[in-house]
Length: 74
Image 1 (cartoon, rainbow, N blue to C red):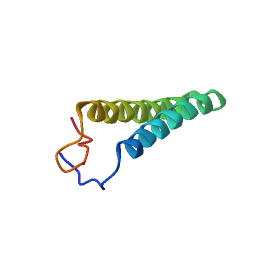
Image 2: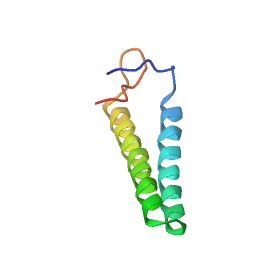
Image 3: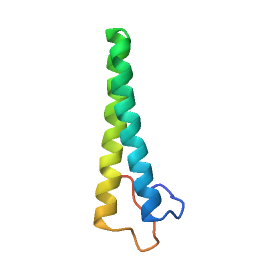
């Protein structure tokens, strides 16, 4: 599925990827202060953030589409 994306520069996409990675690391850090059940939920969300950052980075490495957008779904 291709979602419509705003026209963002490569620098904007890099910032988004960096923010997702930061959020993933923050969730991992916070997981040490919660119950095991909550920790699993935080780790699952951490994985989603880091995986999305990786997918966006790969899409940027492949180059933006002709219209300047990046397809977030491989």
